Image 1 (tube, rainbow over the protein chains, first blue to last red):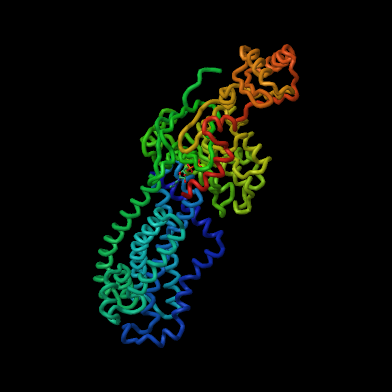
Image 2 (image 1 turned 180 degrees about the vertical axis):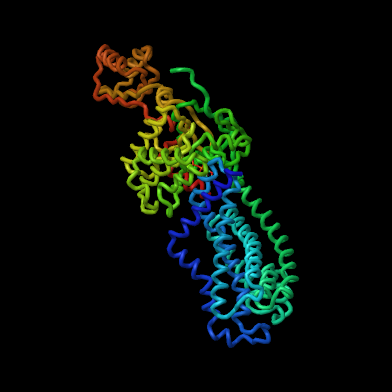
Length: 259
Length: 329
Ligand SMILES: Nc1ncnc2c1ncn2[C@@H]1O[C@H](COP(=O)(O)OP(=O)(O)O)[C@@H](O)[C@H]1O
Ligand SMILES: [Mg+2]
């Protein structure tokens, strides 16, 4: 146990060092969540969105939940990229030839991606605060948002790592990534509420775990505990199933690659 | 030499990727404290064999043990005994040389002070002290290789595996690598390396296995393998083209103890001899006796390439240039 903690911390430390030295990606990591806001703050959307349709004081406050969860999505789906490069350049093999527990590499990645995601969520909520969007459920609500975000992130990161381990080339990885992330966003309640979608879209969006996650985060920000608690319960149920499936698939792909 | 003990035992090892058989029924034994080389062209199955030995790849069938620990069943124990220097420069561009070693120090759970001391020693050994705190993307190919070797040595392994350690290095860096490897062997470490350089196998390795198409074609010390061909080559060219003279000369010398084989050419004879210092005077004497005149005489030691040709039916250079088209097919 002691040993595994040492391994995971050493490996996580490596991810942190890498990020801090990749100037471009460091900047991107910090700025990306704000970019979302800048784009959507464009008065175009502000005016285009009908306050009655989104059922929120303004579009920004409606969008806050979607932006939080989209950030989780982006981080999670990209979470396997560094392992993909490690696999391709042989670094992963070097690690696997050492007597570490096989799971340490994976755990370090989860830890790192979750830490970054949590930080970004806080940045987003900070920017929202600046635009007068204050979570109705307060600090505790923010903690619940972080928990839900992490739970969703774990499953997504597992998918990403599973892909990293099973793809033949990194070209494949990025095509699948692009193929996954756009529909996940558009077929969810991130940008418009389900009630404003055509029937077929509603049906597809209801199958998207992201919808349930957003629908739990949104009342935590906009309405208050009473409306949020049932949604949070549903989201937790959805996420338990989602994570179980993703982790199972991820573990299988990992075992196939590294034994 | 004192009684040697077995470090690595491989029996009937095979590995099939999808439909391609990369290694087939491979068996070999590596003795403790020797430099053992796997010599073969690209695609021969060298890296595949090494990966099975370092536990990162599961064999399709067969068995391999390192100090009698099975690489599959006791992978964790095996990993404690080995160091690995991969073929690719498996370096993190964003970490410094020292950070690579500190990371590995944590992964091997070396006590902090010991790790720091060892890292300093290793950086000195591979002559990277002055560059230890620069990120690896600023390193030259030779420096990356040195760092790779330091990484492989950090756990103070009983067996060090090196996959094509001098591939693409300049002459000086290559000689440095040879020098480290010899020093490690002299300290008692067992070394297993792969190479597709004949001269490297010849000069550095104590014993080699020639591998081609996933199977081992011959095993032995470079000296034994070359001697096994039937000695050094002597080519006599005679002034007289008379076949009678050739026959006469062949008759006279074929009984000599150090003559292994004789092949007649149009203007002379190709003779394989065991001991050139005895053979050459005797050959002169024989030609003098029957009064024929030597126009020229050429003598060469057998080369490892001759051995490779003998066991695989093609020269190393041909094998390497054809393997690309083979693996593409
Ligand atoms: N992961 C892999 N998947 C499929 N084929 C592979 C894989 N690794 C190696 N091969 C094939 O196995 C053969 C032996 O490869 P390798 O062991 O790398 O040879 P060497 O190291 O001697 O150049 C080659 O034909 C190579 O294309
Ligand atoms: Mg190779």
